[in-house]
Picture 1: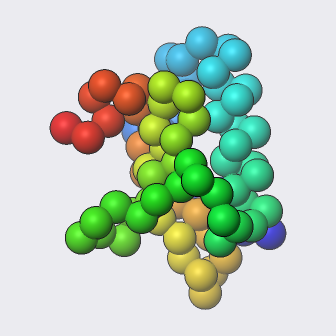
Picture 2: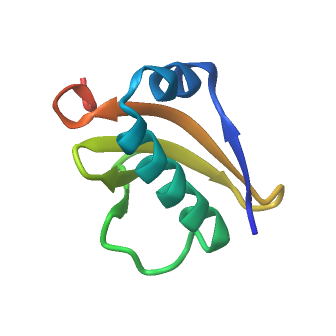
Length: 85
């Protein structure tokens, strides 16, 4: 199982969002930590980058994987409309 590390920006986003969205996103991130390479249609690697994007409803979770350290770094969590700006 991979360890999850949150950036300051992602923690701020989690604190501001509605409780139901928070629970859903945290559960999806925990599922991702169990097996980040599982074939999941809600995860893609961003082109030209080492970042991945996890889609959770109208929210996007951007993260990187550190295989040797078994760590997932959650970089940012944004709503769908402003996620790619």
